[in-house]
Length: 334
Ligand code: ATP
Ligand code: MG
Ligand code: FE
Image (tube, rainbow, N blue to C red):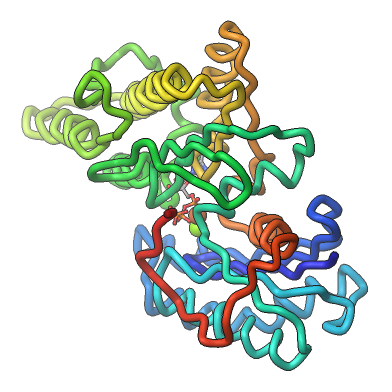
């Protein structure tokens, strides 16, 4: 079974060719980070134009590197939401045209599901039920996976996503976009205990998240210092905020594990690339006999390989998309 996976939901144009859900034959990622950096974030109109420009060459390169043509493919899997509508449309219409012309099935993939499925690419012994902590640029979810394609969202953020909060704090600190990796880098030189930022836990039994108040606490601290003419240490602020975010994520993950009695936690999404988050969770969970699984960093942020992996499992159950498949910017995990 050979799947071509395509991702264009935000600012990465990516395509991958995957055999039998684990043998990755090619993986091309064209990132627009440099284009958007000067604006401090992704500009949707520019993103969709860039996707139009790079879509065909990226797909062709993925096929070339895999030494395959369309006639070798079993199906084409593409992200149809959530994401930026203009960006999604480039992938969806392109994939639709290619699949139709090749006479093979089209598979519509939920981008959030794909982030979780990045774990199945490299780990082949995962047994349900699984608990997933999805921490990305736009989402923070705790999800119970009962089987392939069967999800129960146990908790989600009520305001900002963890990645979004890291990005905003980084921007205010003048660290640039995307902020998560910058915070991780500069936090190495800071003291995580220098500032006591709040850890929002909400109601005692809630598995929901809230990062906007935590973000505001940092911004207030920075503004107050500025008004008083004080210089704050950027590494100290970054390290303290990163620690606050990680503390909340780890505590909520533990609550979810206690509630579901699941034995394996899957970490997913761009923030899952964070080394301190991985390390802290690894230590906390191993002490409790819980297995922690996460993708290699390249499969944490947006990529075509995770789309192809999710597509493979859809293909196995013949879960194909109709030719009327459309982009759904606000798609959620049901
Ligand atoms: P979504 O998947 O929710 O639609 P997205 O696709 O924009 O949003 P991802 O690509 O999954 O998000 O992840 C990007 C986010 O991950 C950004 O917020 C970025 O700052 C964060 N991130 C990436 N690497 C790291 C890291 N090493 N440490 C912390 N955060 C990171
Ligand atoms: Mg991105
Ligand atoms: Fe993403």
